[in-house]
Length: 217
Image (cartoon, rainbow, N blue to C red; front, side, top):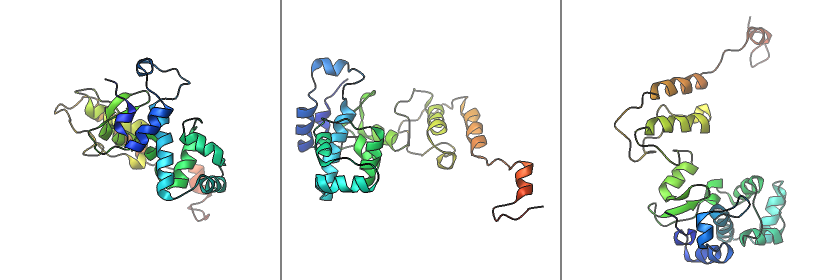
């Protein structure tokens, strides 16, 4: 089921999303690769929302971005907030850094409840709680009934560095876990453990010296 992004945004963000990214029946069913989607709308709304909450003018924001090594003019920031300028990944991280927030806070619409549906480009309409768990690295966006544990482990294996992976993942990451244990869980646990285990230094490195530069032999 498709829902309009505007239903999940506060009133001010609703108006901006509707005027900048009108949702026609054709757009609800398909989008071209170059067409702005709901995540672009969320970024535009969130940049303006957080900038105004921080009390930054577009000129102050532009100065901070320049100081951070990613110059964006005040006019470009205004266009960005109106949905008239695309945001690439470098822009996104620079904007999040300057605003003092996580990139996820720009990518997802702000909702009043975790039960609301939000639109994510490429994923259609999903619960806000699922979208945030996914964006914050807690769980896959979708899970297959009966394979929840395996897919959570695969998500950790391919998404997170070894020092962030847990043995089975966050306890509350999957709200409705299957009581059945997937046969691949043990295999995936061994793979995660192997990747997380520090490898010994080669023989010639050990002979050259330790961390203080002195020989270990």
